[in-house]
Structures are given as C-alpha cells and as structure tokens.
Length: 180
Image 1 (cartoon, one colour):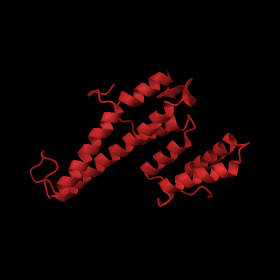
Image 2: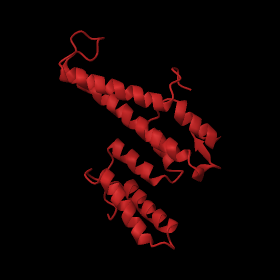
Image 3: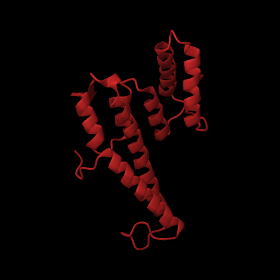
C-alpha cells in the first residue's frame, strides 16, 4: 500500500486538479512551485509535464484495473515481480499500491493477460511507435477480434474495432498502423 493510502480514483482526481491549477497559474503568470522563489517558466513547464505524465500513467493503470474487474478475469492468477498472485491481490495492488511505471504495467499485466488495447495505450503513452512489439500487438488484436466473432461476420467486427481505435489513435504518429 502506498504511504498516503490514496486509492487510484482519488489519485487521478488529485492529479487532475493539480495539473489544471498549475496550467491556470502559468497562464496567469503565477509561480507554480512555491518552493523556489525565482522559479522560471521552463521549470514550471517541466513540473506540468511531470504531472501530465503521472496522470497519463494513472489513466492507463485505471484502464488496466477496469479490465481486471470484468468477469473475463474471474479466475485470474498472474505473476508480478516474480511472485504469483490472485486476481484480488492484483486488483488491490493496482488500486492502492501507488502508480506503477508503464514498463511494469506492460510486462507484468497487459502483455501476459493479452490485453492488446491496453498494450497499445501503454505504447502510445510511452512514445513507442513502429516497433516490432507494436506490430505483434496489432496482429494479435486483429486475430483475437476475428476469433471471438468467427460465426458472426468477423470482418465487420474487425472493421468496427479498427474504427474505434482509429478514433483514439488515428492522428497519432506510429500508433495506428494495423496493416503494417
């Protein structure tokens, strides 16, 4: 458990407030970080970028948590940092264990659990693009959608999934390239 015992939803809320206030303060020309009297704009912007990165990670972690809460993972046993844990332990760890880094979320949760959309989200937030790993994720995602809908027009389902993902990543360089 984290030292402040803040659950993920509250952490997202507080980070959102902090980020919005910091952006507003800069726009108004106020000093964002009161620890340093002569705080320059560059360091204030760096602080805002750091908060934005943490908020992005929190949203990824929340999306991962939402997936684990579905019935699909009812009998989950996963491995985190080399030790096996139950679904309940994994949920508790994601919910109140602080923010994990994107690499940890990818390799310990999203990749082993086959959460392809979460993998794309992590790659997007990590700034990865056009990698062999991303190509593999697209391949597996398309095949997973097709296999889920074998008897129900899989090409329509694949098209629908690609439209949804295009709405999210279509303008992002290197992320939305399912046909590579």
